[in-house]
Every structure is written in structure tokens, then in C-alpha cells.
Length: 313
Image 1 (cartoon, rainbow, N blue to C red):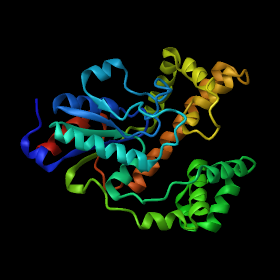
Image 2: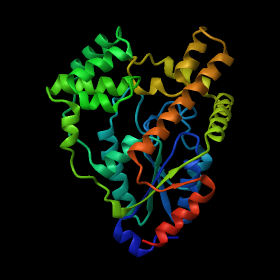
Image 3: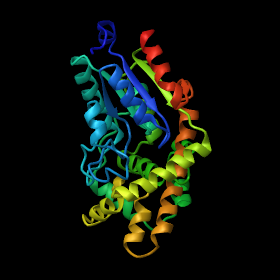
């Protein structure tokens, strides 16, 4: 089945966001099967080749049902950024349209969606020596201290970042240190978005809180049974620098502590589940405040809503 010619000419893309374990990947796959779609990853952890199970990347059965792209294409030792993802996503979108496929971007990384639909600041690459020096200095500092430091240098960026969002706080500090200009100023000069509103059919999946918690806990147990521990052990054997993003995949720190003998497996599982639930809560908050104009739906009704929206284009 091919996409109607009118849709191809409009270069339509479907964007599906939602918290982890909300069922968005299953929704994207079902839509791809019905509309000759290709599923494009918009999750910052699923880009990495390592930890396929722990980051809930599509399995072989999923890949056999519909084409996928931007999954597992980045090595764990790579300093991958939002800017790099936008470049990769643009290329994947162009390729999908050229083949007459409907691109379906799905993931839980709100910053990816925002960069693609609202534009991205062209911040110069941060020299590795500045990054290394900043990370070394930060090792002895608690999150509140780093956040306060950012508030002094870039109060606008600090006001938008959670005090415990250490990675993005460090990123903002690196930018002002390397460029002499606050990150918030770079963001105000963002380039035009690649996708315009009229090109997109968007959806945020919403799942009742207790149901989502149960899904997260059940899935984590399934990951353990499917080999997540072995994945974490293999990644630890690579002895990557401590600031690599993949090392902070939800559940990885807890499972690493178990493998070192610091805690027992039951406690590691509880810690990993709790970490994932807190992440889901942050995702929901981001979607509520930063993507408030996106249509909402529950998983059982979302496919019909998307098909109807596409038919109306």
C-alpha cells in the first residue's frame, strides 16, 4: 500500500510522543502497517547501539513488521546531541518522502520534537578540553551548587531546568564557558524549524498514572529476564568515560551496582523501576508544559484518531 499522492506532496509526518512504557511504539507500528509507514526513533537512549533491551528498542519481530530507522545507529562512546539527531532525522524524513513512505516519529524525548518543529540553535561545537575540564570540576559539586552556578551565568536557562537535571545543567555551563554567551541567547537565535505545523499530525499518549506505573514495573522485570543484566555487564567492560549518556540509561546505574556487589538484585530492580517511574513523571510534566498544543489520546483510541487526522489532510 502506498501513501496517497496528496499526502506525499504535502510531505506529511506523524509525531507520536508519550512517557516511557505508554504504548507509543506499538501505536507507531500499527500505524506504519496500515499506511506504508517507516518508524523513526525520537528517543535519546534508543539511538545507541548498546543496551537494546534496557532501552526498549524494537525487537526482531517489530523490525519484521515495518521498516525502522535511527535506532541503535550511534556507538556508546559518541557524544551525540540534539543537533546531531535533527540532522539524522531530516535525512530520514527526506528519504521516506522520496520513497513514498509515511514517516512516523515516535519517542519520549521532548527536546527532539521541539527542535524539529520549533527550530534549533546553531551552537558551536564545544572543544573536548573544555568539556573534560567542566566535568572534572563538577564531580565534586552537588546538583544544587551546579544549578546555582548556572543561575548566576544564565538565569533564563537555569529557570527552565530542574535542579536535578545535571546533564543539561552541565551542557549549559559548557556553552557559556566555551562561547562566552549564555545558552538561552543561542536558543533565541534558533534556525527555522524543519517541520511546519501544517506538515504534521501530532499526538501525545496519556496513560492513567497507576496503570503506567504498573507497565513500567512489569516491563523492567521482563527486561531482566530477557538479558538486560548481560547488556549492562558488557557495557561496563568497555570502561567508557563516566559522562557518557548511555551509562545513565534508566536502570543501568542500579544494575551496575548489583554487578559490582554493592546491592542485591531485588534492590537493584526496585531502584531501576523507581528511576524509570520518576523519569516518566518528568516526561509527563514536559509534555504538559512544553507541548500543550499537541492533541492527547489514550492508547486504545489513538490509532483511530491518527487515521482520521491523516484522512482530513
